Image 1 (cartoon, rainbow, N blue to C red):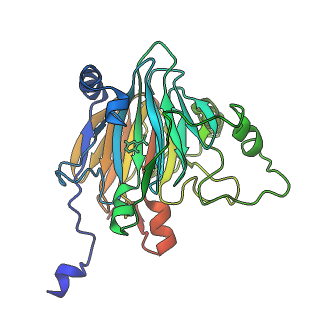
Image 2: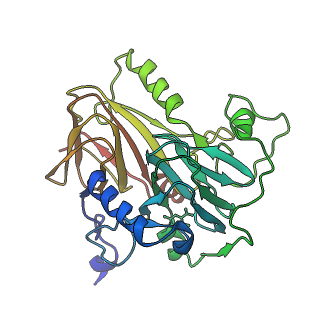
Amino acid sequence: MFADIITPEPRSQCVAHLWRFAQAREWLLEAGELITAKEAERRVLILENPGMRGESRITTSLYAGLQLVLPGEVAPAHRHSQSALRFVLDGSGAHTSVNGERTCMEYGDFVITPPWAWHDHGNDSDQPMIWMDGLDIPVASFFDASFAEGFDADEQPLSRETGDSQARYGANMLPVDYQPQGLASPIFNYPYARSREALEKMKQQQEWDPCHGLKMRYVNPVDGGYAMPTIAPFLQLLPRDFKTVPYRSTDATVYVATEGSGRSRIDGEEFNWGPRDIFVVPSWKWVEHEAGDEAVLFSYSDRVAQQKLGFWREQRGGD
Ligand code: GTQ
């Protein structure tokens, strides 16, 4: 039947869902007693969409997981075609190394591993560190374009000072003859402190988008596009008691609350969230957010890929 393969509207297996961070953290720490980061290669609890059991996807096109690195552990160096983002949710001071440079990670930092970049993670702090991983694994699988390999040592050699990329690409300047090295942003840590400070300053203007409050996208400074080639990351602030008007778009979106609390009505169902809780809004389902306390939400979706391919649509305001 024509209408089964060319549907008049998106028909997704992905369903709205919320994961409580506190519960996931308990399970992760239990996993930490059963297997090391090195044995597992990556010790991750996959956030699997309940509408797509067994498929390791949080949306149809994207993967999400929660990764634990315990003090003294190393998650060994490897590289793959898939891009990854990290969004730090617990602990302080663990590090990841990407292309010969190490960055230390703090709560709310958004960190990028570009496609085919060597990366290893380590924790020299005295607390467990947990972050959310967002990867384009289903996209790579869809195109049958997955490659991966291990490095011949647990940790890659460091060839740049910590902070080098931040200075070189993250200070509103670029090296004069800079040529892009691939499609991902050359900045690989977007510290929460700086992004949050920007929202704090802008909120004084009291200019709220009815659908989004105050919503920013993380950019690649080289071309002003999204920070990653397949995954679009965002950070938004909703002032206390702000209620957004209904909104829907074709990019199913993964949200994590970094501060404050609130609730979201997704496809007619209410989800209450607090700090570090993660929830997913499927493609083309109406969503409304309501902040209790002032809230900050990080989110990511495949919007950048859909826009490049000409598929992306949004509808504001509800009918
Ligand atoms: O840290 O490189 O959640 O390769 C899944 C696959 C994390 C990682 C994941 C990975 C990684």
